Image 1 (cartoon, rainbow, N blue to C red):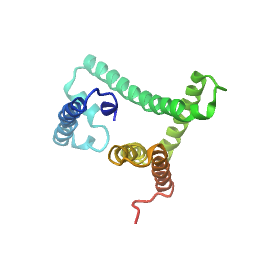
Image 2 (image 1 turned 90 degrees about the horizontal axis):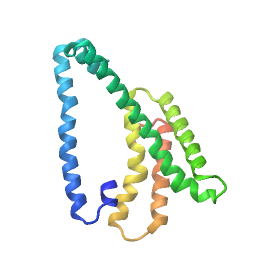
Image 3 (image 1 turned 90 degrees about the vertical axis):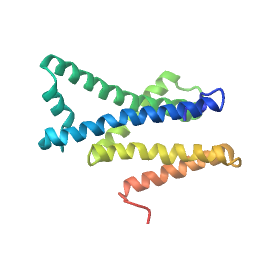
Image 4 (image 1 turned 60 degrees about the vertical axis):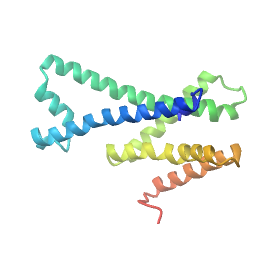
Length: 186
Protein backbone atom coordinates (compact mmCIF):
# COMPACT_ATOMS: atom_id res chain seq x y z
CA UNK A 1 0.00 0.00 0.00
CA UNK A 2 2.89 2.35 0.79
CA UNK A 3 4.35 1.95 -2.71
CA UNK A 4 1.00 2.81 -4.30
CA UNK A 5 0.35 5.87 -2.13
CA UNK A 6 3.87 7.30 -2.40
CA UNK A 7 4.37 6.91 -6.14
CA UNK A 8 4.51 9.72 -8.67
CA UNK A 9 3.36 7.61 -11.63
CA UNK A 10 1.75 4.23 -12.30
CA UNK A 11 5.01 2.64 -13.46
CA UNK A 12 6.89 3.27 -10.22
CA UNK A 13 4.70 1.14 -7.94
CA UNK A 14 4.50 -1.61 -10.55
CA UNK A 15 8.30 -1.88 -10.79
CA UNK A 16 8.69 -1.48 -7.01
CA UNK A 17 6.20 -4.27 -6.32
CA UNK A 18 7.88 -6.63 -8.79
CA UNK A 19 11.33 -5.87 -7.35
CA UNK A 20 10.01 -6.26 -3.80
CA UNK A 21 8.38 -9.59 -4.71
CA UNK A 22 11.63 -10.91 -6.18
CA UNK A 23 13.59 -9.74 -3.13
CA UNK A 24 10.96 -11.22 -0.82
CA UNK A 25 11.22 -14.59 -2.56
CA UNK A 26 15.03 -14.43 -2.43
CA UNK A 27 15.16 -13.61 1.26
CA UNK A 28 12.28 -16.00 1.93
CA UNK A 29 14.34 -18.91 0.66
CA UNK A 30 16.92 -18.42 3.43
CA UNK A 31 14.72 -19.74 6.29
CA UNK A 32 13.44 -22.56 4.08
CA UNK A 33 16.99 -23.67 3.32
CA UNK A 34 17.97 -23.32 6.98
CA UNK A 35 15.00 -25.48 7.94
CA UNK A 36 15.97 -28.16 5.43
CA UNK A 37 19.57 -28.15 6.64
CA UNK A 38 18.44 -28.27 10.28
CA UNK A 39 16.28 -31.34 9.66
CA UNK A 40 19.45 -33.14 8.52
CA UNK A 41 21.95 -31.75 11.06
CA UNK A 42 19.93 -31.26 14.25
CA UNK A 43 16.67 -33.24 13.94
CA UNK A 44 16.08 -33.13 17.72
CA UNK A 45 15.98 -29.29 17.69
CA UNK A 46 13.65 -28.89 14.68
CA UNK A 47 10.56 -28.45 16.83
CA UNK A 48 12.11 -25.87 19.17
CA UNK A 49 15.11 -23.67 18.38
CA UNK A 50 16.53 -24.31 14.92
CA UNK A 51 18.41 -21.06 14.41
CA UNK A 52 20.31 -21.08 17.74
CA UNK A 53 21.18 -24.77 17.25
CA UNK A 54 22.61 -24.09 13.78
CA UNK A 55 24.45 -21.02 15.02
CA UNK A 56 25.94 -23.06 17.87
CA UNK A 57 27.21 -25.66 15.39
CA UNK A 58 28.69 -23.32 12.76
CA UNK A 59 29.79 -20.18 14.61
CA UNK A 60 32.75 -19.55 16.92
CA UNK A 61 31.83 -18.31 20.42
CA UNK A 62 32.63 -14.61 19.82
CA UNK A 63 30.67 -14.60 16.55
CA UNK A 64 27.86 -16.53 18.26
CA UNK A 65 27.57 -13.76 20.86
CA UNK A 66 27.37 -11.10 18.14
CA UNK A 67 24.80 -13.20 16.24
CA UNK A 68 22.66 -13.65 19.35
CA UNK A 69 22.72 -9.94 20.16
CA UNK A 70 21.89 -9.08 16.52
CA UNK A 71 19.00 -11.56 16.52
CA UNK A 72 17.68 -10.13 19.78
CA UNK A 73 18.02 -6.62 18.37
CA UNK A 74 16.04 -7.59 15.26
CA UNK A 75 13.28 -9.14 17.37
CA UNK A 76 13.04 -6.08 19.63
CA UNK A 77 13.05 -3.73 16.65
CA UNK A 78 10.21 -5.69 15.07
CA UNK A 79 8.22 -5.57 18.30
CA UNK A 80 8.85 -1.82 18.60
CA UNK A 81 7.64 -1.21 15.04
CA UNK A 82 4.65 -3.48 15.52
CA UNK A 83 3.51 -1.30 18.43
CA UNK A 84 4.49 2.16 17.20
CA UNK A 85 3.06 1.91 13.67
CA UNK A 86 -0.54 1.09 14.61
CA UNK A 87 -0.37 3.49 17.56
CA UNK A 88 0.60 6.36 15.24
CA UNK A 89 -2.21 5.48 12.83
CA UNK A 90 -4.68 5.16 15.72
CA UNK A 91 -3.73 8.49 17.29
CA UNK A 92 -3.43 10.53 14.08
CA UNK A 93 -6.29 9.11 12.02
CA UNK A 94 -8.85 7.94 14.57
CA UNK A 95 -8.40 9.55 17.98
CA UNK A 96 -7.52 12.97 16.56
CA UNK A 97 -11.02 13.22 15.04
CA UNK A 98 -12.58 12.90 18.51
CA UNK A 99 -9.92 14.90 20.33
CA UNK A 100 -10.74 18.39 18.98
CA UNK A 101 -7.56 19.88 20.49
CA UNK A 102 -8.24 18.90 24.11
CA UNK A 103 -5.20 16.62 24.41
CA UNK A 104 -1.79 17.42 22.94
CA UNK A 105 -0.87 15.21 19.94
CA UNK A 106 2.19 13.73 21.69
CA UNK A 107 0.09 12.75 24.72
CA UNK A 108 -2.54 11.27 22.41
CA UNK A 109 0.13 9.21 20.65
CA UNK A 110 1.50 8.00 23.98
CA UNK A 111 -1.98 6.92 25.03
CA UNK A 112 -2.39 5.10 21.72
CA UNK A 113 0.93 3.29 22.33
CA UNK A 114 -0.39 2.11 25.70
CA UNK A 115 -3.66 0.93 24.12
CA UNK A 116 -1.89 -0.96 21.33
CA UNK A 117 0.65 -2.47 23.75
CA UNK A 118 -2.16 -3.61 26.09
CA UNK A 119 -4.10 -5.13 23.19
CA UNK A 120 -0.93 -6.88 21.97
CA UNK A 121 -0.26 -8.24 25.45
CA UNK A 122 -3.82 -9.51 25.72
CA UNK A 123 -3.54 -11.24 22.33
CA UNK A 124 -0.20 -12.76 23.36
CA UNK A 125 -1.76 -14.27 26.47
CA UNK A 126 -4.75 -15.54 24.52
CA UNK A 127 -2.63 -17.01 21.70
CA UNK A 128 -1.69 -20.63 21.51
CA UNK A 129 1.76 -20.41 19.94
CA UNK A 130 3.95 -18.04 17.94
CA UNK A 131 2.63 -19.25 14.57
CA UNK A 132 -1.00 -18.66 15.59
CA UNK A 133 -0.13 -15.18 16.83
CA UNK A 134 1.60 -14.44 13.52
CA UNK A 135 -1.48 -15.60 11.60
CA UNK A 136 -3.70 -13.40 13.76
CA UNK A 137 -1.40 -10.42 13.27
CA UNK A 138 -1.78 -10.68 9.48
CA UNK A 139 -5.52 -11.42 9.46
CA UNK A 140 -6.77 -8.17 10.99
CA UNK A 141 -4.95 -5.79 8.60
CA UNK A 142 -6.12 -7.92 5.69
CA UNK A 143 -9.82 -7.85 6.58
CA UNK A 144 -9.91 -4.32 8.00
CA UNK A 145 -7.48 -2.48 5.68
CA UNK A 146 -6.50 -4.31 2.52
CA UNK A 147 -9.97 -5.36 1.39
CA UNK A 148 -11.46 -1.82 1.70
CA UNK A 149 -8.35 -0.41 -0.05
CA UNK A 150 -8.62 -2.90 -2.92
CA UNK A 151 -12.35 -2.33 -3.30
CA UNK A 152 -11.78 1.43 -3.23
CA UNK A 153 -9.30 1.15 -6.09
CA UNK A 154 -11.72 -0.74 -8.36
CA UNK A 155 -15.16 0.48 -7.29
CA UNK A 156 -15.87 4.16 -7.87
CA UNK A 157 -19.01 4.41 -5.71
CA UNK A 158 -19.21 4.72 -1.94
CA UNK A 159 -16.41 7.03 -0.92
CA UNK A 160 -15.29 7.49 2.66
CA UNK A 161 -18.48 6.11 4.21
CA UNK A 162 -18.20 2.84 2.28
CA UNK A 163 -14.52 2.47 3.20
CA UNK A 164 -15.14 3.11 6.90
CA UNK A 165 -18.12 0.74 6.84
CA UNK A 166 -16.00 -1.97 5.20
CA UNK A 167 -13.27 -1.48 7.78
CA UNK A 168 -15.78 -1.60 10.64
CA UNK A 169 -17.56 -4.71 9.35
CA UNK A 170 -14.29 -6.50 8.56
CA UNK A 171 -12.78 -5.63 11.94
CA UNK A 172 -15.95 -6.60 13.83
CA UNK A 173 -16.21 -9.94 12.05
CA UNK A 174 -12.55 -10.64 12.77
CA UNK A 175 -13.01 -9.82 16.47
CA UNK A 176 -16.03 -12.15 16.61
CA UNK A 177 -14.08 -14.82 14.75
CA UNK A 178 -11.19 -14.44 17.20
CA UNK A 179 -13.28 -14.17 20.38
CA UNK A 180 -15.54 -17.14 19.57
CA UNK A 181 -12.58 -19.21 18.30
CA UNK A 182 -14.22 -20.02 14.98
CA UNK A 183 -12.15 -22.07 12.55
CA UNK A 184 -14.20 -20.97 9.54
CA UNK A 185 -17.38 -19.10 8.64
CA UNK A 186 -19.60 -22.07 7.73
